[in-house]
Amino acid sequence: MKHLRDIPKIDKFLSSHEFGGISNALLTKIAQETINRLRENLLSGKVETFDEQELISEVKKRYEASFQSSLKPLINATGVILHTNMGRSLISKELLANASKVIYNYSNLEYNLQEGCRGERYEHVSEHLKTLLDVEDVLVVNNNASAVFLILNTFAKNKEAIVSRGELVEIGGSFRIPEVMSQSGALLHEVGATNKTKLSDYENAINENTAMLMKVHQSNFSIEGFSEDVNFQAIKSLAQKNDLIDYYDLGSGYIPTLPYNLGNKEPSLPEILKDKPSLISFSGDKLFGSVQAGIIAGRKEFIDKLKKNQLLRMLRVDKITLSILEETIKAYLQEKYEQIPTLWMLLQSVESLHVRVSKIQEMFNDRCDIIHSTTVMGGGTLPNREFPTVALHVKGKAVELERKFRAKHLIGRIENDKFLIDFRSILPEFEPQIITIIKETLQ
Image (cartoon, rainbow, N blue to C red; front, side, top):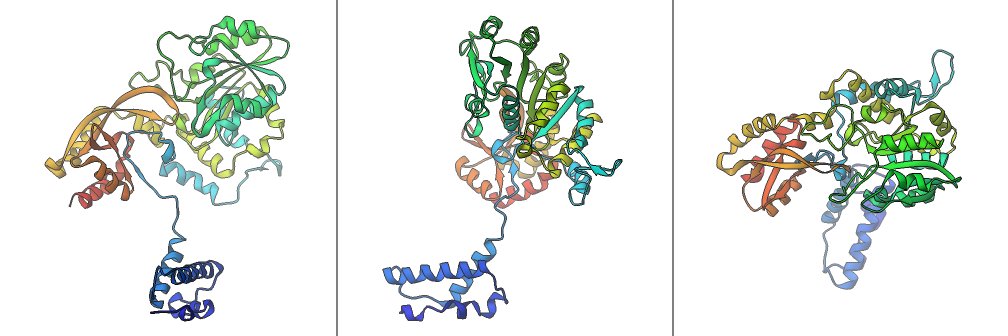
């Protein structure tokens, strides 16, 4: 039996050669916590003895574990390409390598090389982005929620912004349009019914305190059946007629034609921007497939006013975001969509997915089979729009298999009591790792 007097003193305990001369505040803190817990357990009778060598090993393990990153790479085998809980859009190694040349060096982030004076940080992406979108000007902030807030605060503070009642959305993290409008200082004027809003509703609501007609994309839900909304072109025309700002919070924007008829109800950025709206905003990740950012595009006179808002300094992006975003935009301009993983995965045909899954299924014979199914885009985009996918069904108890694969950082999904590894959201470079994980799990 050990007694309290046998508990080693901290300084003596830390002098053990097994700590390899480590002497820092973190090690001391961990040692103190470990010894204090031992003291409490001895006093309460939970333990009657201890081994000092085991104490040293415990402290070492806790110390080493404290330096492990809490963020870990995962294989997204759910089939949901823009999985919000797993970071949404992937960044290709090629684009990241190109951007890193700027990221790990000093750069002309806010330095004008021609004039030798202070420059504008947003000019580095603005020219390429203006060309891609064919707009007068652009502005980049740290996410689309910030874009919404900045636009409302700049143009509708203490004034009314008219929005359809069916577009007062809530997205992930309890981001609610009415509350954001309130915090920005804008006055919400909701019109129409939940399921039906007509152009006349907007027209009848316009008054001397109206500043903006706003359309909000229903990013993570859709209203079906007896419903009606007003397209943005009509809203823009009405705003122009009444000398008001028209603003489309698009949420997620895309450039090339989407496969599987997914673009039928989702107009592309070129389609929306051809009518020269006052302002639109969308996320830099999501369907655009780059880093998290809020991209604002539209008329130069309005972008100039946004740049003068003091809030912009709190919402601006850093050199890492700008560097990666610029590389993504350049890939778009060259139509190198294979460098944008989100697009590459979405554009894969069912036939190509089947070939990839078949090669792995053949390695495991009757332990796995091939399932043709459907998936969704995720990330608050393309609500309720399913498209085809191909998955590897690993036979066995689905819940148990899901847990085992998750322990190896492969996140699959369960469908009809079957554990699936869905290849719609998997890049080919991960296939060798997946094969190894399957072998280890089924052995």
